[in-house]
Image (tube, rainbow, N blue to C red):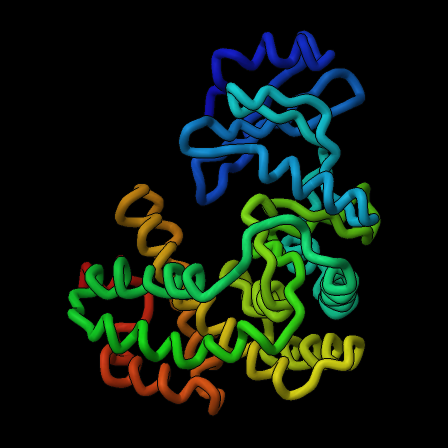
Amino acid sequence: MNPPAGVPDFLTAAGWDGAEVRPLAGDASFRRYFRVVEHDRSAILMDAPPPQEDPRPFIAIAEWLTGRGFAAPAILHKDLAQGLVLIEDFGDARLKETVEAAPESELRLYEAAVDLLVRLGEEDAADVPPYDMAVYQREAALLTEWYCPAVGLEVDVQGYADAWRTILLSLTTDSRAVTVLRDYHAENIMLIGGSESLGLLDFQDALAGHPAYDLVSLLQDARRDVPASLETAMLDRYKRTTGAGDAFDVAYHVLGAQRNAKIVGIFTRLWQRDGKPRYAGLCPRVWGYLERDLRHPALKPMADWFDANIPRELRGDPLAIAGA
């Protein structure tokens, strides 16, 4: 985790000459992060190296969010040619660890996170691409492209795509498009400055799509167990506040199944292609959410496909299954 060679000059240009650069945990992409510290101030350095990464979408969505009163990091300095961006430091208090340390805060903080999504849904969508059928299908296909071969399965790929198309068609017209952050979960929601003000991270892949998607991201979190009772309560809170009806329930479970199938595929790819085996170990939790979604009547064609193609004993950690 050594910073790129151009960082000293970049920091000098940004007014942070001589600051200490400390590595922070990376994520599931090519992006890396560092904390820049000088006396009593700090900032976060994002290293988003081209051509693998492009920081411009992050900058655009950050500015869109802050312009509407949401807490996204301020952009302090940028060098797009190098993929370096200096951003506001929201600290280390993530929703995930805060709730783990103080379980009594879970309900209150999840209510705040749901209410933020209600506010986000009241805004016209940002100028971003649509979350359309082609994107849904491409993402869902990651399960058959990566997970199934990893556990030794040959499956009905065309039947899988056909079932998704049948199920997803209803989502393209039944709701006004909103800005979908796409990774709205407990490791990307920050508690700023020791308060319970929620800050947002990791939104560079935002699309204009269905409002249920980010609620699924929050309540079917691949990185922490969200109790089914909390999921039900927060789904009810969102529906009660927005006036959403039964169609929203259907969309929630359809998008839950689509997202979880995608994540199982992505986590398998992170293990096999990118040498990050820890993500494979998160798959059993994601399978649990996926099977919960598949029990919804609207997903019967998809549930039938899973029953016919992926035995239950092969739904889990692909690394463990492959090594068994």
